[in-house]
Structures are given as structure tokens and as C-alpha cells.
Image 1: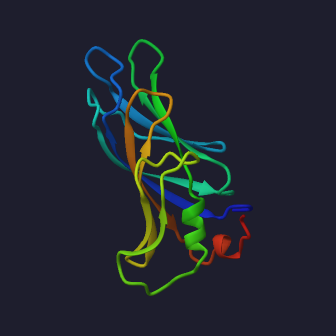
Image 2: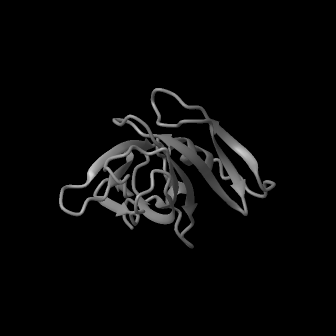
Length: 171
């Protein structure tokens, strides 16, 4: 746990209008990369609007290291085709977490993040307080592809007795 700030749960919800890569459609799956960590969802057969609803958990050491989300088309006999990628910027989320807010009403917006040239957001993203936890829903516009977005949600996982994020000076 040396150098670790904590755990980040990423729920990969769904793809929207993903690119077609095969004559029968695409068989998309998502790969999340962070440093040496690599996690992936299952593939969804012939669907350009797949529903994954899968939770992947990363061990976070440095919020300045980009988390990359890449969508691939599963192929049987050839190398899987890339269907675009996006970076997940967790810095606004970490900043909100470091405010150490408690006892807020459910659904309370803590921070609003606007789409910009420096992030992959397709729409405004809100860091909010729900059920005693901070979460952030994002719709990411895929880069290096003709079309496609991926919806995700992130949430910090508290580790009992571990003060990684609260004691860290990150930025």
C-alpha cells in the first residue's frame, strides 16, 4: 500500500453510437489502463450501443497519471480493432474528495466540470454526494474515431484505517 492514495471504482455503464468495425456490426469491450494496471470488460456481441454495467477497481497512486479508456472490437481471427479512446480526468473528483465534506443531503452537487479541450467530457459532469459517498458520472467522447461515447461513473472506495487521500498533498 506504499504510495497508494486509495481505490477508485469505475463503473463502465454503456457505449453510445460506437463505430461499426465489422460487416455484422461491432463486438465492443472496454480496456482501462492506469500505470501498469490493465482491466477490461466483457465484450458485447454485435452492438454499437452496448450495456456493460461492470465495475472495475484501480489502485490510485497519483491522480496526475492519466487513466485511459479504450474501446476495442473483438475479432476472432485478427487483431482486435480500436474503436476510440478517452482519458478520465479524476483531478476535479480528488479535489472534491479532499474538501472532506460530510453530512450533505443526497444528490448535493459539490463540483461541476465543464467539457473542454483538456478533457474528454461530452457533457457537463457533476461530482455529487450520495449515500455518504462522493461520485461522478461522466459521458466521455471517444477520440481518434469517427463517432462514439462511453458513460462511466467513478466512486472512491474508503479503506478502513487507511488515510491515503486525506493525508496526501497531491497537486
